[in-house]
Structures are given as C-alpha cells and as structure tokens.
Image 1 (tube, rainbow, N blue to C red):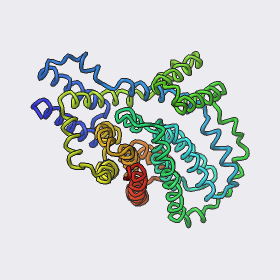
Image 2 (image 1 turned 120 degrees about the vertical axis):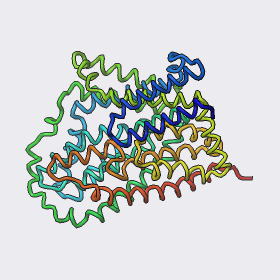
Image 3 (image 1 turned 135 degrees about the vertical axis):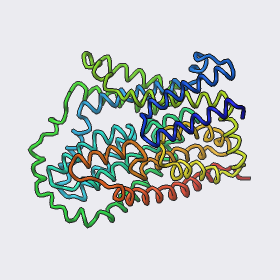
Image 4 (image 1 turned 30 degrees about the vertical axis):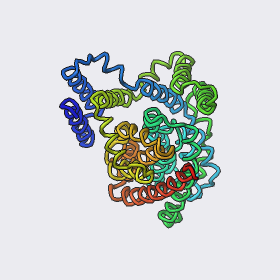
Length: 429
C-alpha cells in the first residue's frame, strides 16, 4: 500500500468514527470525506475529479433513488395502512393474533421495501392503533424492527445494503432468492415462537376491550389518494414482474428508473412534492460512500484487502462464510450497515469463486447486524423515538435484552444453514 492508499484508509476510518459518534451528519461527513479522497488521488496520481467520479457505482445510486421514489408514492398513498386495518379487523382484538398478524404483514412488505420506510409508516400506525385499543405497543415495535431487517435478506430490493452487495458482488438474484427464502422463513418462525414466549404473559394480560372501535373506521378512509394507491399497485406489480423475469436480460436499475419516473409522470402536479420528500440524505450519503470506495479501489487498497482476506480464508468456504456473517453481523453491528456492505462486497465477490453461497452470507451478516442494539441502525432509532412520543419509552436495556439474543440466535442458525447449503454446491468425485 502506497502513501495515498494509507491516507484514504485513514479518511475511511475517521469517517466511520464520525458517523458512529453521531456528532456530525453522516451525509455531510461522507461527502466531505469523498472530496478529500478525490483531492488525495489528484495529488498522488494526477487523477482528475471527473475521472474519479466516473469510477463510482452510479447504477446502484440511481437504482436506490428509483426505489425511494416508488416507496414515497406508495407510502403517501395510505396503501400499507389500508391493508393493515383490514388485517387488524380479522384478529377480533386478540393481542396474540394482533402481534402475529402485524409481524406477518411486516415480513411480507419487507421483501419490497427498506426497513426505514417500513418503520416510518408501520411504526406510526402501530402506535396509533394500539393506543386506540389500549394495548402496549412496545413489544410490537421491537418485533417489527427485528422482522423488517432479517425478512429483507432474500430480497434484491429489500434493503439498501442488499442493493449495494448484489450489484458490487455480482450476485445472481435468482440464486439469492432460492437459497435465502427458506432461511428467512426459518428465522421468522423461530422469532415469532421466541417472542410469543417472551411477551406471552404480557400479551395475555392485555384486555383490548376497545378493539370494536376499529370497526367504526372504514379501511377506505386510510387511503389518502386513490390515484396513488392504484398507481402504487401497478408499479409494484411491474417491478416484481420485471425483476423476476430474468430472461429479458434487462438491467434492474433500468427497470426501476423507468417505473419510478413513470410514477412521477402520472402523479402530475404532485410529482414536485414527491421529489422534495425523497430521502436525499440517503442518496447523497451513498454518493459520498461510493466516492470513498472508488478512492480505495483506485489506490489499490481494496485489492490488497481482498487478497489479505482470501489468503486468510484460503479454500475453506466455511471460514469465508463465518467471516462474512459474523464480522458485519456481530463485531461491526454498532456501525451503519450500508458502509459495511460496500466495504465487504468486493470480498464477497472474490470468495464467490470458491462457492456461490459464500457471497450470499454477507447479506445475512449486514441485515442481522442492524437490529441488535437501539443505535445500530436508523429503523431502530425510529422505533425508539415513536415509542417515546407515544408515551411508553423503550429503554436501551429493554430493547437490547430482546434484540441482542435474537440476533445471536439468528446468526448461529444462519451460519449452520449456509454451511449445509454450501455443501450442495461442492462437487463430488
């Protein structure tokens, strides 16, 4: 590693520390770090900023932007609240059935949406509904955060880290779904079983005497815009169809951008407001992050890092999978999972030559590592904030004593599952 590479590594470490401290906005820190890294490349190699920018993963950035547009339209339409209220009425006020139903719904929508918008929409709805029926919403909020994170493991569009890893590590999305869907089902079953035993006495004591009040509310009243409601259903259908039919050989980023831009076109006058409501902080955070990764790549740091890990792993796929699951899932769980995904994705791609299941294990690590502690990721903090604003705060200990053991169990199950599946891809004879 030359001096320029060393300086870029220092920039990355300092940026991660700043992000972890939460004293400076993560987007501002990432963009500033990218600018400094660009200056280092210019001084060291005469690499212009234009050349530097062209190295960045713009297809991934545009894909994320497109998906955020789709989520913005769907979330503001009231579609999720509409479906949730219909499902809630079928529980007849039974707290255990409410608990299971809401988590099943979160599991399903987590296949299409990032955990952050899910908690923004479903978290707020959960708090309001539970207050109406006089039910403690804290068990639901904690469980929804956990489920929203691991349920996205098999989905290409289920979370931003998934997009980063799938693009950067050249993962076969069909194989990704086939291998990881059964795992997500197993984790969901284990999670619901454990949480029902943990919260069982508390849920049994809930009266929910006022649940009949929900029958007064018509589900159709949840829909804020019928136009956006139907537009969202059509768009989601096209996305799922487009991502599923791999025979078309159409890039996922192109499909997503066509659908997202089409939604804005058919939103007419509301398109400007929808664009303003986009999570631009997330988008520019990715721009800064991919800029730093591009600098690491140009200075040769990524190659040396990958070579070092592959030398350590050798031809042992089990060590490789353990590394990609436990390092981001447990050791680095206090750091935002997006930069961890971007940093480790090249290792996943390199180790993929040993066994196609190895890079898939990184998806497990970055998603499970996001919910072990309250400040591990943004959705966790959203849930904690919603609980505090709802009048029943979730303490650090209360969150961690549930999420941390669950996360550890999930990592153990996932490791054993990946070991077993990887053996199916080992040639015999």
